[in-house]
Image (cartoon, rainbow, N blue to C red):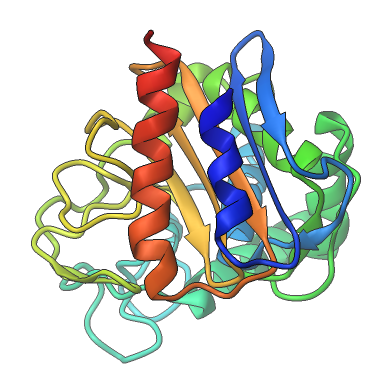
Length: 264
């Protein structure tokens, strides 16, 4: 897929990108086996691990968790009020602390440190090669192969039921306004359960050709993964160039070029 060659012009020392469908990898460009930091894309893996815990009955989405009045659902949807002390359900406040609190609840209920639970629930079943090296909100490091495997899983889930993933990629606490990091205030700033939702957001890091049902995440390490259920494709990208103005332009353009090429 020629569109992926655009990553060579981004100025990163290392960059890799790939397109995956439910049946496997469509195309890649750049090193597939070089571990790089995922930054906040880590939240997709941690969120998936929490959903496994929900299906196992280890935790419940609507049990109290985090600040008074908050639940596990609030934490995963960035609606708990952390870290500002805002009342739960009032604003969408993007929060690493909330994801860390959700992970701590899974560890408490399961009796297993979260990094171990994470490994058994997600890393080993998906055959990932990287590891969680700290915060469950931001400190996974792994190669493009791992990101492609996650994209395929989110197109055709095996670790959780399709109904569970559908709930996780549906707007939680509709209507909440907030700031999408790097892209400004959004009204509404729709979010699922750990998954950021494109919906009608503008500006956005995905492309104009992406469907409103697109979901995923990006990270400040210059990394992103989106899944477009209408196109039945996922686009994964890893770099070592921190997020900045370059990405606000380059990522949507790449997304549009990939989707255009896929439909020719």
